[in-house]
Length: 101
Length: 269
Image 1 (tube, each protein chain N blue to C red):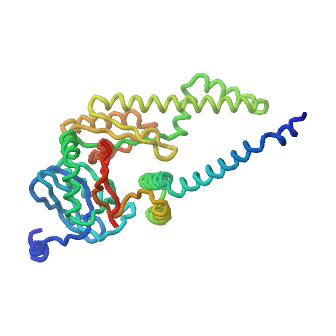
Image 2 (image 1 turned 180 degrees about the vertical axis):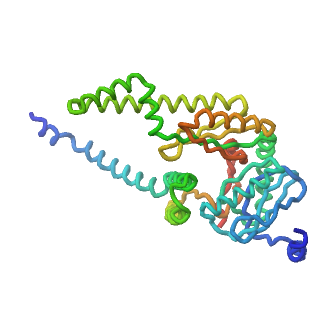
Image 3 (image 1 turned 45 degrees about the vertical axis):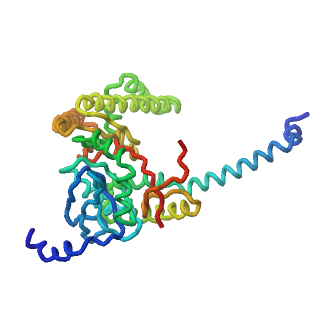
């Protein structure tokens, strides 16, 4: 039996499970990307460094900073949609009803 | 200064501060109310003062309930307050953008986290942080390597001599040699900087370098009494490496990199 027919007759459950897994993975990756601001933070720090080093002027800094702030707000929006924690904004001390030891 | 303030005084002192939102900059030990001037975040010269619980105080300014974007302007305002406060106090810095709905909520934070704050304030007493970022000029370092590294020099000469015949692989090999020599050299620089500063620092922390020219992004916790000695060491290092490295030395900062109190906070909408 050739390799191709072997592949074609391979128990179907495995590839299907694989497909499902990868869809979930893709979904999770997309979601992680939507709610992850670490890349934006990194870019902001690079931008800051570029300004300090004189590689860009104040005008360009302000323009690019505004873009990054917009992206921060988008991440915040998605984090809120997914019920995840966000930094900044009003907070208060959290009181657990159920203290676990 | 007194005259300038006189006009505002009736307003500032005759009415208690409105108990609206409070932006929190840092925590200090003080049982007495303190004033730090009209330097608050938000661009409206908000006065910066303290909210207390026993001998702990939160340094705050009044704010509408908003989310502060981490723009350069806002971050500098946050920083400037902390710098001002730390001239006279040991501070635990709060993370940027922390807003409480009322002074009572702030007192509640101090009350519920009293022990952790108190403990860290004792540990951080008379200690300050310095930031040290080291950038290199890659081209210059490579030029130096080509002069000083026997193997690299030989291979490079060889490639140049048979420009036509030199193989693709010889070039690849040269590239690899240079990369690994660069990495080795970068590590040696960083190790030397750490070794020089360790005797005058209490602790250090390495953060991820920013961009592709940075080889070191570290924070050092230093006793106030040792800050001159630390300065001297950094100057000596930047002198020793002035041909190849750029030292970006900042501070004193509050101990941002050495305090990690997990506050149990939730959103208050």
